[in-house]
Image (cartoon, rainbow, N blue to C red; front, side):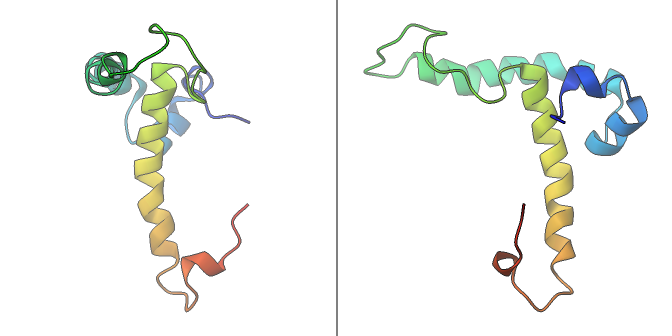
Length: 100
């Protein structure tokens, strides 16, 4: 199953656990996030010297929807530090564990 905003909002309790935000809080942050994403990520790419394609041309990213981008960032920043702390009591380094 691929984690997506449209599927996850149907399960508000799971949404809250994964992101730390309610659906309403997420939606309030979405507009400012979208504006900043356009300004800081998309804008410089469109203004880059030597650009060949027009805006919207080329390969699409793996996470095309802005809602899913924000969801990924929130879930990742919430879960990644937890995964690091799981390795602290172990004598092995993180690289020695096989991740699938």
